[in-house]
Amino acid sequence: MTDNFYGEVLADHNLHPLHRHELPCATHVCKGLNPTCGDDIELHLDIHDGVITDGSFTGLGCAISQASADIMLELIIGKSPDEARYYASLFHKMIEGKISDEELEELEEAGALQNVSKMPARVKCALLSWNTMEKLLNGGDS
Image (cartoon, rainbow, N blue to C red):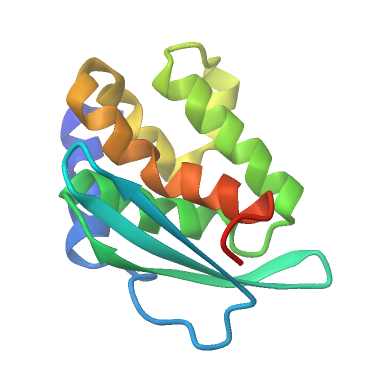
């Protein structure tokens, strides 16, 4: 895939996020903050019978943090919390430059954020929603 494609994916998720809204039925809520650049999100997940049935986020942030949150939710809705944690571990490996091509494919559109690793000031932006999701799934802020 080309850098242009990646840019289009990020722009689309930033400008037209599917999951940026309140979620009154959420069973779990967790706040995340990136004090480096002021990004903040509130992640909302609805988890029933071991499945993330719905999710959303609210808050303000840069294009990368907002797109990353929307892409992450697109990937984890319909999955178990353990599967969501697995995707988070792959995302971290990708950002660290330690991911295989096969693992990168598993991340689907989240792979569009692979080049963020070359922009150290933006790494925390891309990781904000993923770290918040891990905190939430590990019992934080529910």
